[in-house]
Each structure stands twice: as structure tokens, then as C-alpha cells.
Length: 173
Image (cartoon, rainbow, N blue to C red):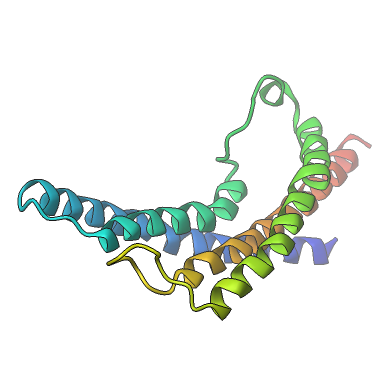
């Protein structure tokens, strides 16, 4: 059980650090959008690269923030029943959901995106639009990377839930 605790602590610290650094992309995104709006409406100029940078930053923010969001239990959830469950029931539901949905889906995305990212690197893919950003493969590399962190956090949630059930059972016996 100590090993499970150490894994949970390590992954939580890792994803917390990544989440905190990733959150700064929100500030960068706001600044880029403000710059885009000012140049478009005040100076009547527009840049494809700036517009692409906006959605690149948003994509990275969304992808890299997923594990941090799961860690802090801030993800979207249909909360019809979960909020009424006790800690043990929540832990069991987290175990089932993690095993049936989160882990297989993360593994599928990691596996399926590898050729997609590899092809992009091999082609030295860049924006197809004139004036667009180069090195689109860097953005695409965030797909398997972010789902790897999400998978690690999924195992952390699984182990944390197992430990909660164990502690709950020890308290009641």
C-alpha cells in the first residue's frame, strides 16, 4: 500500500506542476486575443499566424490541463447520483469508471495518435494556409503526451480509490 501511496503522491505532484505551468497559457491566450482584436479592428490588419496561435494555445491548454482537472475533481460530471453517494460508493464508482472508460480511452488515443504525430513530424507539417504557423507537428505531439499524463492520473485516481475503500473498511471493522 505504501507503493500505491507513493505513486499517487508522485503523479499528483507531477500533474499539479504541469497544470500550474499550463495555466499560464491562459494569460498568453488572452494577450494574443487582445492583440488580434486590436490589430483587426483598430488597424484593420489580420494575421493568419496570430489566429492559428490562438487555437494552438487553446488546444495545448485544454489537452495539458485535462490531467490536472481530473486530479482536482473539476471535470464535467453528470452529478445526478454521485453527489448523494458516500465516500465508499464514490470510490467504487471511480474505480469502475476509471477501469471501464478512462484507462481504455486514454490508451486508445495514445495508440491511435502515434502514427498521426509521426507522419506530421516526418512531413515537417506546417499550416496549409499562407502566413500560417510552421511546425504543426509540435501541436500534434501534445495529443499522446497529454493523454499519457491523463492515463497516469487515471491510475492515481484508481489507486487513491482503492486506498479509500481499504481505509473505509479498516475504520468500520
